[in-house]
Image 1: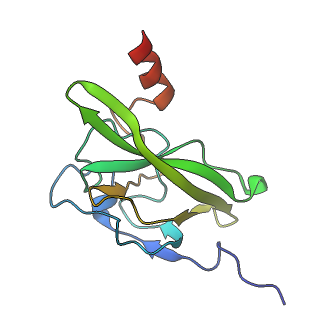
Image 2: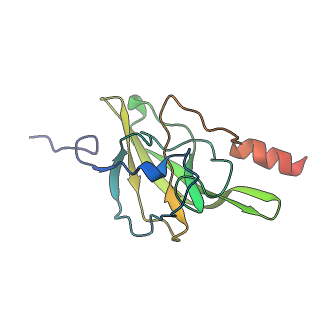
Image 3: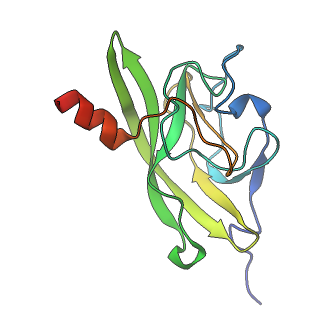
Length: 150
């Protein structure tokens, strides 16, 4: 008998405050999140953005967490990606100020599951967007680094 995998056994996160379009308090954090497989559902979004949110105080937190790297295909299986926190110091933008590894899996039902761990600080929370949305005023990490060198 086959055992169920992450595409069948996950917890759902459907908090509306996680949306990349959310700029309003109160501020939340994922420091108390239990490590495990999660699927994002609901109106806030269904996936972690792969570009930084472009500013602090988005996604219902001080430092929004985004994913550095593309979402996998089903054929890729479980992949490891870098979770990054967006931060700014004065006029310096740090698109990946703090980072840690997460895992991502594309599921046959057309959704993703993520193996998430608690964030290292309470000012960080995982962001979400809808697959068909784009984040306004975003800068990819490569562009931000290139601009800092130029």
